Image (tube, rainbow over all chains, first blue to last red; front, top):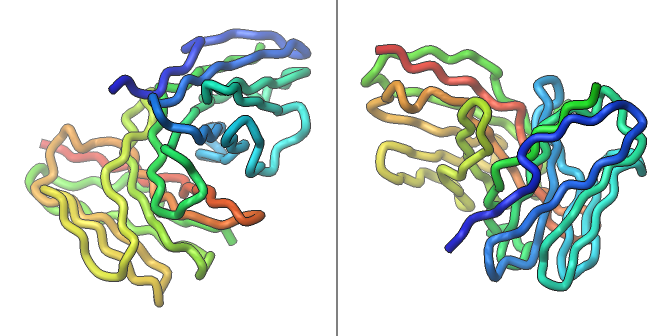
Length: 115
Length: 113
């Protein structure tokens, strides 16, 4: 079974621009979570989507948004990029989410650099 | 107080030794605990999950959970240079009725020949 895929793998943007990242979960998985990983803050939860609905949200500004499509693929968008948004953005999928036994499987990540 | 705390390391152990990685968490309602390994420049990969107090063994890895002390650990026996990586502890937390994972900052392990 194919793993979680993320595109693009690398991205370079300038301040003020916006960016859209894509994530395709493992086949059959319906829950997708997004994380930001930086050297200083570690892995931080952005939001989770299930059945096209945002179910959970972390403490990030409104510039960070996401959505999920009917095929469970998810996108996240960051508007008005700031230098501090440079990070590795990770997507993780689980079969259904919502259960404490759910295991999250990570994609390879998108490395975003903001200049 | 951080929700999930880990010693950042680096933890340096000789090849063949036991590496002991520790994690404490603040949410007493947490029910699931995960250890992920992350190589430099790569994404986290799951090593083990544990839900009940006690030990859980999988090959060279043993996870230990003590909910009363809010403590979870990972032991790596017969450490190999290929085990050199950052180990992330993750703990579930219910927020708004739904489950999410809170990660520690990770412990960097270096296994030297």
